[in-house]
Image 1 (cartoon, rainbow, N blue to C red):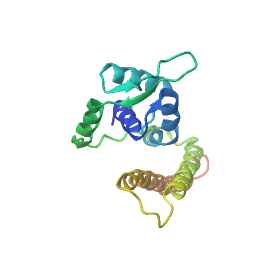
Image 2: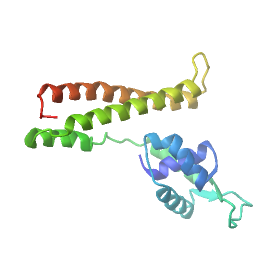
Image 3: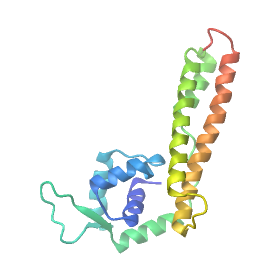
Length: 183
């Protein structure tokens, strides 16, 4: 996935100003594709220059007034092309996994505490996802196709957090079984 495609997706869902878009990123797309506010604003400029988006007509940027963007037909076509494109899974890159591997050769000093910290962070993220699911997808509500796909992404996040909780609990147990002074 790329940032331009994430922005096109968000703007097709709802035309937005750069500020509103960055806030929406922080509350939704940012859970699985993060970007800084600077990256988002820079990419908006590139997308506008490539004629994939435009500022809404009649909206002249004036100091204090936000420019709102919408996706042009070329932007919709680009997003549809990208959705249809084949892409192989990316290799996993996770600093925690590398640190555990390094601990195998230099010893796990402090590793147990870091694993427990990660366990708490993933518990918090899972609680966030479950709260979003309860609010946005209550039981018994019929969902439109696009909502079903949004929920599928959310369920993927819930499954990943559930995996991390189980795996981290196992990792904490392994490190603790190494005995005192090994944590």
